[in-house]
Length: 532
Image (tube, rainbow, N blue to C red):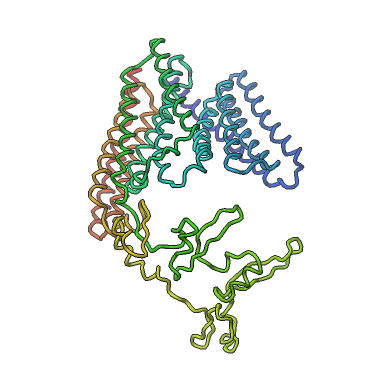
């Protein structure tokens, strides 16, 4: 038995070494191509990418026949990585569509192929890569379908909650199906389902995240056809997988009921963040970027010096007017009387009329030149030196007034010249400003209690299915939760006494954790092995 355990440890070590080797080869190939990119003809670039990808797959399959499983898996993983690299580099070579939809297509080609090759060549590493790439594709494709329909970002917050939870439902449904057919990928889907829900709980556990989620508004236009299809397909896979597992007598009703309970709990907690909306945020002086429409920008207070600037993509923004906003000599010189701008020419044979717009240079002028400088340059003599006059903006004097309304949305918006920004900010979380409202503390406490309860449930589940990986994941989540909450308390409570007490408590927690957690982990793993 000791020999078998040592052999398993050695195999696991070889697996890690092989994967690291595959990653290093991938990085090396990418680096060589990038270094000589401009010197290689396009046809040769594509040939190198395609040949190296096929070679990695072919050699990996051949080595597997020689019973070198871990080396073969590493090479197949290398092939998957080279394929993803090839997709993006070939798209760059031939200058394909660079819009969001164009990039979304590239992600689709990548995750679909990786998942396909994972099943064909029995490669769990490529399956993981496909799952990782699937999620950004899902978000980007959804954004493409609603980018012209939604104007208010708050309407999309609750939609992202739907997407996150539905993705977890899809993973668990695939786990049920693969377990019913006794497929080796079942354990991977099970592990990443647990990981996924732990991440959702962890995100919800932060006070600064809760008001951002709570800013959601329901908007029918946010439910695009793509989103509806994704939700319907995910729920269909989940339900059909349950029915299929039941027909195979491989259904664990207790486990499914617990999953559904956790799923509903997370959804309710996400909805309850609405109670934190407007409770945490920064109250700061209104700036030009707070005005999102042309009419609002044009009617902004004159002392803010706002102007509507249209970028190359045709989208306009409200920004502080300065010389760097003007990209032609005529526009720059026209702003001389108001902003003191001056066009600085550059010698560039390939670009006609090259140059940039900058502020009038007062600092190199003598006394007589300073007095005769254009009025827009605002040059004045200070102590015999010519300098640019500084005029205090209204926002500068409003700063201290506005910050007294931190964590008080209604009073902030009622104060003239102040704007509200939801979410955590460094001033409020280190004790410099108003304390968190009591309701936010209650919501934070409830979510963290449920998070700890979920971690305990995960540890039990790891024992129940005999998975040391899930047990380790649960312990890591527990340690991360303790450290995060400790740092949070440290930042919320200022003062020497609070710092001293928290430092002592933190030291004691680390010492006790270093002593107890290894024993706890050992006992959990032993009990999990006995369950098998």
